Length: 578
Image 1 (spheres, rainbow, N blue to C red):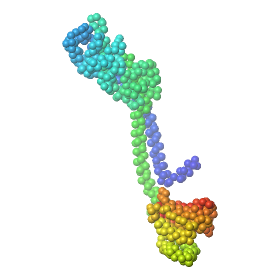
Image 2: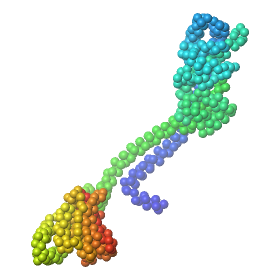
Image 3: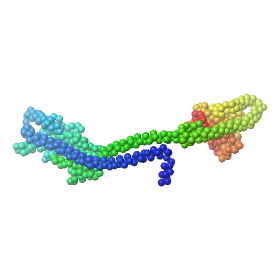
Image 4: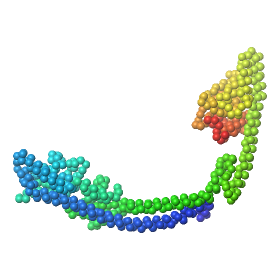
């Protein structure tokens, strides 16, 4: 309870008011929707069961009519005097011309019967001698080829057989329920042929499809063992009915409601049933749509109420939100914000007090920035003053020594590099220069030192042109090179090499100053250390100019040399430094 109370207290004022209004609307609406849903569910359940039973009875009557038509046509043909005469004639050898005349008569006769009964697709008559007579839409040769003469399929059978008892290549893509009728001689009673009446399965399918609820529902013609004769959903023709359906078909029940609605209706002509099964989710699909409609209406109502309540609450909460938003901007560092809130209520008084606070805070921050700038300038001056005396004295002594040893050309080069070095270093320009200019200062310094130390000092630059115009703090590399000479190579008997390299890594520029001198224990580095003041000074000046994510990192190992890694922004000064 305490935790819930604390969370409620943490909510913004506007949220508290809005949720209170929403709760007063949602609860009555939810109870109304629940009541309506329960009542409609029960009513639709009974209505759907009744409709399904009635539909199955209706479809059973329609199927019964179709079967009766097939049965009646079969009886009519077998009792026809013309058919009887033709089949008697063909029992004996007859002239070809006579045979042709009778065949044409039979085709015309059968076509007339089909025209009178639109439910029948084709009629085939087969004599005991194997003669085949067909309606015009059947090829007699094809009937023979399809082994319709196999008497084992229909001998002794008068009735309907399911599709696929005979091959269905008579019409591509179609299958038929066939009525078989034995033709007996009226005079002698001897069997003289068979009549096959083909009723398209599509005739049943069209009627069954009207009752299709969904992919999982089924309605069709089945036998007592669950064998599917015809079905609206052809998927069941492959999978068959489950054991629960077969058990229901063999029972005395006509309807069953166990997770799905099952209904059956017997067909009198054949030991077949009209069988339907519909899953619960399909039965109540309409109910679901009704519930969705109610909920949609409720949601629409809630949206309208929410919009109206927001319009009212906005007049109350907008000044407060504006104040919080501008406070956040001040928190992000923008001290130039002045909160503009009209009115003289409590929020207006709070805004006025906050404005006074930001003005005082801005003055304080300006003072701190100014002091940092002065400290940075003083530190740079100190670094320059360190370079001036001892380096100048040592270089002048080297020039004198070169002159005394008749090395006037080397003395000239040293004097020239010394002038260029001090001119570049002492130029009154920005504290940040290009990497190219910084490398020039470093090159002048190294060339002077190389004359002094000769073979003990070697150096090379490996910096790509693509970063030459990027920015770097002035006098970043020279102090690091100086440390490498005096604390790395000078102590090594054979001297060594200094390599200055550069590369781009993601959005950073990385410059390394590496030497193969005596190395050192990195723990020896200390902010107050006399010999390593230059390293920390460079690191601090980089951070002040570019941001705390940039600076200097030292990697060293005694006896293996030292590598100083400088990280700079790629593309100029970082946004933080700006």
